[in-house]
Length: 311
Ligand code: AMP
Ligand code: MN
Ligand code: MN
Image 1 (cartoon, rainbow, N blue to C red):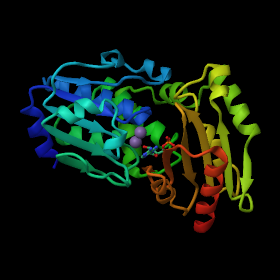
Image 2: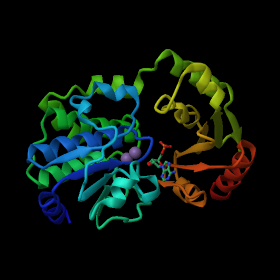
Image 3: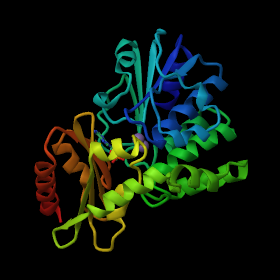
């Protein structure tokens, strides 16, 4: 499949690189690395990423992202996205003659003309690192920093889904001069003051169910309005509950654009992607999410019931 994808990309007039809505570090890193890699082999490509959290501004060449585009793209390359309904800038995807899906979600629906899905892989950025090698594209420092970003964020700082390939790749990036410590700090660990205040609110609302095996918290729209926090500032909140001894499943709901966006994390054997699927979401066994119209109380009760069935 990797040779076929390269062949399709090489014969394209113009390639659009797309990611999932509310892009995280893996989506941003994947889009930036692929944009730079394709331009290196003289392919006319644009990465159309409408919005992204401020901390990614430190990435070299991220200013090449287009927030929107009226150009015609015959090939749409979708990265880090499990299904069509999560694609940002879907009109570009719909207009393309040929579509490509490169991803690592267990729940990927193989929605494109060509699908390269590394199910269960730790990050789309790691999948891409292998792909670029097989395409003989040199991973330079800028591409390497983008790929390392996706690995750091999707593994939440090497806490999830650790495989030796990840460490081999990051080790090679350190040898190349990528400042992994700086990326880790600037993208994952540092909190702005408003982020810290938001975490305090979430922590104060943390409630436990099922013999303290389930942790639940939430952020309301009014909290974000008061603090000026937005997408990207909620990273790390789900870890507060998850990192408490004995907690099997951590749940975080935040209200945005008239709906709750829900994150689920599992520390051990509970497959939270099967729970997210009930609500038309998806993700991985240990990290999943979905969006819902339900009220906070109904949502909480339904989720606790579903988790309790799996404990
Ligand atoms: P999050 O909790 O938003 O960090 O997402 C955790 C994982 O679940 C990520 O791999 C997401 O791609 C996936 N995910 C989150 N929301 C959705 C959704 N609405 N549909 C499908 N997958 C999702
Ligand atoms: Mn992602
Ligand atoms: Mn990912």
